[in-house]
Length: 304
Image (cartoon, rainbow, N blue to C red; front, top):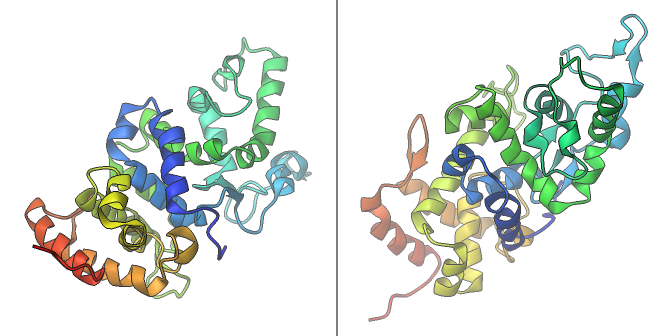
């Protein structure tokens, strides 16, 4: 995907509606800022609500249509993944991740298009009628299409994944949850392989973006826009998001900001970032110096 589907300002508004206004999990809200959720979307899809590249709804259905005659079960590939498994949405959540929600934490689906309280039951509940099982299976078979038809649903998949991780006890900390979300395999994490950034580098990029936004905008990005003006605000925010995806469509995502402009601002941020094992941050005592350097790189002159 080479073109941004929306710009940052659309995504900021979407995050307020679909995340801040809808998420009821206080642990998620405490650990994952709107800017961090948007960073995941920028890295994953460049603000596009889509199927994973190379996949379609027909692939989504292969769990039910591609049956291995030797086992009479869904066919699996060499890595053990069920046929056709892939991700959807702005934040790219896999079909078989949603399966785990349904099996162990179905209430996390409440609020997604077409899901109702009659579909909330545990996998091994013998009292559930065949009709309820059928209805929930049909919902799972079609939720990819419903997700792509609704921006809010396409964005909500991310915070619902983190909520499931925490509720299921899979992850109890921010970095642990992000590492699971980012995915990991031996080849991808080998820095000698020329296949793009490793999973750990991707996760660090997300938290670096979040740290930059916290440092410069404990207040709303709209305040930045008022303070700096539209072009400068876009360049500033693009510099923060450069850490999440340095090869993105910055002109489309950040109001005409060029790649080189975003890179220049990110270099200033990078000088002040402290990268710890559980997060990245910019120390409060460095904020004034950072602001001065940011204004310099943006070409802004202080007036008396």
